[in-house]
Structures are given as C-alpha cells and as structure tokens.
Image 1 (cartoon, rainbow, N blue to C red):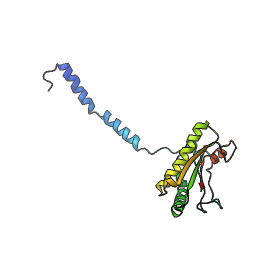
Image 2: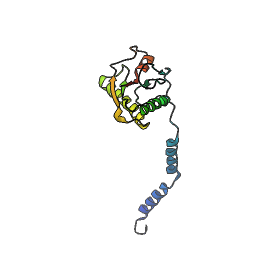
Image 3: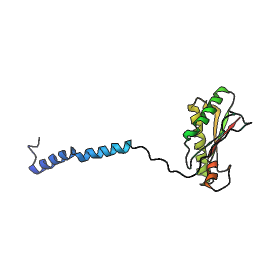
Image 4: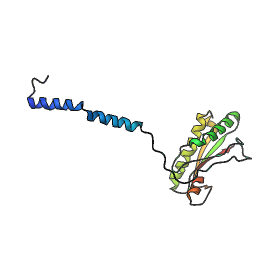
Length: 172
C-alpha cells in the first residue's frame, strides 16, 4: 500500500495511524464516559425553609389538599415533594367532570415585568402539563400568569420571595 510513496510520507502515515490506536485516545473516551456517568451535583442549600402549603377549607376542589404549589427561584419545575398535591387535584378533577380550573402563575418581586409574566405562565403551564399527564383533560384547565402583580407577601426577605413563587388552583 505504501510502495509508491516516499519513505518520509509513509513514515508519517504509519505514525499517524499508530497514534490513533494509543491509550491517550482511549483514556479520553474513558474520561468522557466517566463524566457522563457522574451523578449530578447536589443543589446548593439556600438556608431558607421551604414553604408548605396547607389545605384551604371552603374552596372548591379537594378539601384535604393544598391549593398552592411553590417553586424554586427562577424555576418552573414542579418540586417532587408537590407531586401528591397534583395527584390529589387530578383525582378530584377526574371525578368532577363538570368542573374547570384556572392555574394562576406568580413570581416574586425581583426581575422585569415581561420576564416575570413569562415565568409565571411557564409555572402555570408546567402544572397544567403535569395534570394532563395525570389524566385531566387540558381543555378544562386554563393557565394564566400574574407575574409579580399579585404578591402574597410584600416583604423582601428570602422567605417572602419563596411565598410569592407559586401557582394557585382556582376552581370555577
């Protein structure tokens, strides 16, 4: 194969092909594979106690379940700890086919108006998608955002901000 090439070119090609099979390429692959299999780092602890929603008697919807789901800062991911709340609302909605629901997304006071309206909408839609996954007809659920317009707590502490990052369930 290398008969017609000058010796120097053949030597360079041979060395190049040999280099492809060395352990340095293998170790890079192993490092890459290892990096993909590493567990995700634990989330940073904020030092703020999470807000726990309690049932609100006298409201439509499941009586034994909170009508608020809270979110982390700058997030629209439903917390795993709030899944039982969503399951209870989904169960109630499936057993009351004539009822509809408005999910009201809220944010804390930080950030611009447009950004917070979009984040509140994403939070409400995240809860709506979770309810749909649990068997609720999405046509019965409306997701709206109030952004930072309707604060539950006007304080400026981290605890106050946490109480404002929420989605409220309003049955109609």
